[in-house]
Image (cartoon, rainbow over all chains, first blue to last red; front, side, top):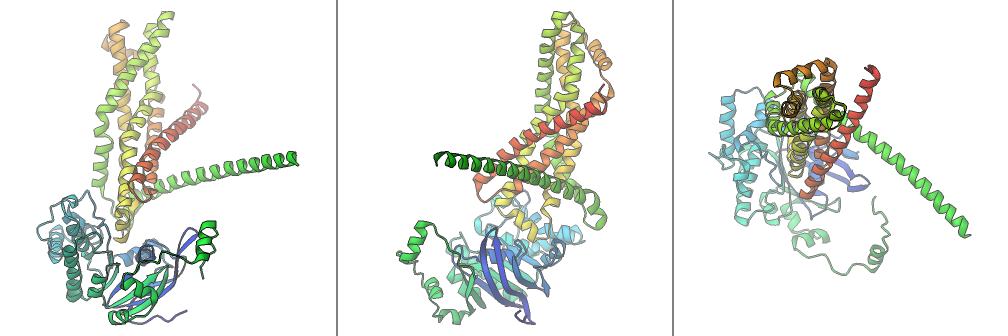
Length: 272
Length: 279
């Protein structure tokens, strides 16, 4: 069993996650230090979203440990997990705002349900949070009335509502134009400066990753192939990392044996 | 050689069939287990949770009750009124030959109260609300809203399902009573128009022909129908996969499964009532 670092906000040790028979993550180990922004890079289907879902407790690991705030979340009940979730915020890829509530009510919801604050206090806090993400005076809008970028900002405001110690972002700039995406990057940078919260950002946008990251981890086919600072990534010689950073497409001609295997449908497992 | 091959094939088929029956049985039980789990957890969040520091937001149940009950009144009224009228016409068709037209009121009252009122209400509620539950929860699943609830430390069942159960438990019997009344009114229209009743005498004849049991067995069934509809609608919603077409699939599944299960529950409980007191 690997040692857990003392100043780690999140420690993942030999994490394996499966959907049914199919294993998605094959033994992942890394730490996220307190106050740092860790970017999880990886191609589509690499398992990076599964990794994020496991960190916030939406998927149960099949084996391994996930230590968050000194608790191994792989071993605890839903109710104990809820106590930890109250200290975490998550911004979803599609924003996941509640469509039947206004933007303000969306942000107020966790405060209303989890705290004993007065309604007037909650209203003020909602305005503060919306102000922080650049959506002041939007509290009475319905989510459907907002643009994609504004929805994501509102989702960030909702994630910030409970003053979380760890903030998770799933593809913050996916589906946004470069200007709006840059705005979101700046928002993340501002939050980092203002609060020094621990942040975990899943993305495949390289420009954004190199802008916001303190450290990065590259997930490829369910394994971590590289972990380090931006500079270490830039100078990495790992073929998969280079391919990703230099935007080289997968070679068209695959290994003849693999191709034969694919045709005959003989899928030998590559787990291990 | 050839014969042996055929027997082997037949044997494999029988084995496959028994296996299939076993699979259906197990998945059927698993499905009902899922429904019971949803209902049980909702009951926990509604009745026990508030005493353990997990407040239950009654306003959510109110808005659901509006959608399930109040907004269904026009269509329930229309359908049961017409069915009451149809029942009167159909029974008069037979009763006329026996010269027993005065029994029309009794025939309509008993069939509506015991069976058709609660059942038609259930069918309307399945179409309006069971499908809406599946679509709502399914869409929330697709847009990650269910996941968002969980990451915000809310239980999706407490948040989305429990208010629906509570609203349904209250509104189904209310709707069924209203449906009973409208069905009898439908019969009354025929009675007054074609069977020498006055409005007063028709309702008097109805009152004379029914016993309390006719009313409460219908109401018990309507409560059970409500439970089935809510559980199936929500379960199908939660089992929605990724993508918009999946929402359509779960909505269809919710309606079809609800109708089938409501009829099954109806049969089981009608039989049970018959065995307990066969008068």
